[in-house]
Image 1: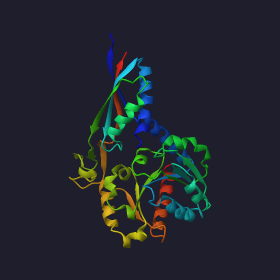
Image 2: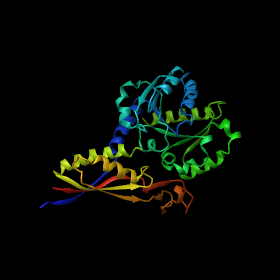
Image 3: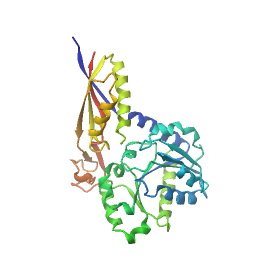
Image 4: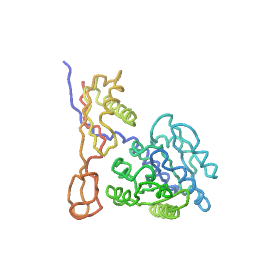
Length: 223
Length: 114
């Protein structure tokens, strides 16, 4: 006679990712490094924004970028061309980065960084589930995508501390209403910081950089 | 489509727990999946059926309980289910909202054959 028994487990399915992410955050906080995770759909302007922010920050700060891509090192090469160290993670098909992928390349991350940027795989769905050990998660929304995205992809917007609206130089040509996008995002995440930016004409970049600098001081003063 | 990766994590946990409980087979697996968990239950089911073959859970049934979003206002204590994911307290207007449920991705129970 087969004996059946019900067993209550109550384990988070992403618990193993969370443990690795917490360890990464702990170690990088100890190093005095602020970790920023950039999430967006493909083509929203993550790499362009990192190029312009990187060029500005590298004058007075030490920074590096982790580039997540399904294939190719194209984005990492763009970042390196600006004189900024880039570490490439190619997932070979996976649609998001996981903390253990960062764990594998952890030794390549310089220990004396002020800022570590992570450019996630272009995808507004899956990356939102995976904490990578970041202090700040930024979701980018570009003007051509439309101002109705926050409620269509709530997880990405609810779990982010910062919304960066990109390609503001295209506002005159598109039906995109930045105020409507902002209002919708703030209704599902009222504490989110919002920046309106353009990597072409530089709008909003200084404010965004100030926000990162302030966050760096906050993380260091807590340490 | 990260459901396959999540199911891979699930099977790691299942194998470990089955061994710990000295089970011969796993006959049922029950998950709790919140609407804010960021995963699609139907895709989890397909991934589970592919993954379970030739494992200790090859005959296992997957049950998924979907949970709705419930939140609590940290300012006035009002509990509510936000419509349209609006995280602003309808009672006092506060932004200090804590999610009580609806974002979970949990292995709740297993049925084991000993």
